[in-house]
Image: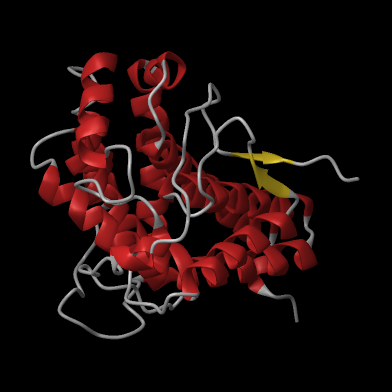
Amino acid sequence: MTHPDTEPERRQQLRDEAVGRSVLYGFMSLALHSPTPETYAQFSSGDTPRVLREAASVIGDATAAQQLKPAVPSSDDKAIDIAARVNDWIQTFQPLTLDQLLDFQGKLFGHTARGLVCPYETEYGQEALFQQPRQLAAITGFYHAFGLAPRNSERERVDHVSCELEFLEFLSLKEAYALESGDGDMRAETCKATRLFLKDHVGRFGRAFARSLQEQDSMGFFARLGDLLYDSISLECRRLQIEAGPPLLRLRSAEEDGVPMACGQGSESDLVQLEVPG
């Protein structure tokens, strides 16, 4: 008997959903990276709202069809309208200048891990002193397993939320390619990595980070991005039947901080690049 996911029409539908997820992950990652004229131009482009809305529409249709529910019932069990979240975020693009974006991001994130909003995964949670290096090594291991590494020019930590979202963008595109080419083994490997990375990393702290964005930028670009990120993570955890991380998560003690912060900004708009095999 033929598995339903092997049918060409179903494969095409799954491929479109994976591409839609990659688009949202990519734009959220870009928005949380240090702004440049190039990245600002992408958000100012007339094509960007259309692309985001199309991605949200595909994801929304799939969500409605599957009637996704959280893996663990909770008070957070609510309908999620990704298209509405995308539309709300898009409304903040047009009035924003590059100088304003730089100013807003500087105020929110500052130049240390302990700004108003912390974008670093391993700062979240009350882990023991030596847990953070292990977490950083685990994140790096995910990247290396797929031939990826942080750009040397970025000098940014691998646990930055922008970098982690970009990795999910990459995995979504890889899943789409596997579906397009009919490579079941590649798709299985990619979906397994996506589930594990979401469960142990982005899904663990991402909603707490998103909630901080909502609270610290109550009306603007980053607040509406926080809305979208929070619901996107919640929806992905439902799709993969993973328990989503809490909306509130304390930062670990600053006394345990043994990891140096970023000491410069690069000129590239992305954080992760494919390495050439040795």
